[in-house]
Length: 157
Image (cartoon, rainbow, N blue to C red; front, side):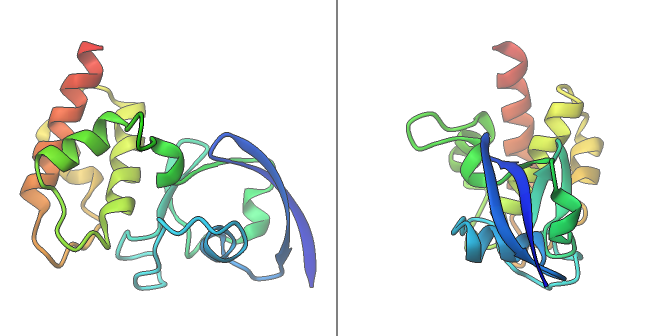
């Protein structure tokens, strides 16, 4: 069964046809063609599909389309741009906090949620915020350094 879902995606109001049982991940990737959000495990356990839903990091693979009606979704495409990257994106590049990049968008979105809620996180709070992300490349130490660097830059701005 199809339903019309109205929501805000990366600052733009959209109204799309959603299928009953369709996930937010499927809507983002296949209907709206926003490909930065990735399918990892499909069970909300790896973190690859994390997006911001009204400012909170959620697993898009487990979020049904009906649950986003009237809400605001931010994906990596809405975090920053090539001409004006978010401080997290810049810090990740500088710290080489990714290798294959598969998990990176989800980690960035969880980090963005953390910094929105807590602009001065401790190292332990950063580690806790990204604990639900699996990075097979083993870049977690660089990721933590990048988040610390971005937090310092945002606090100084």
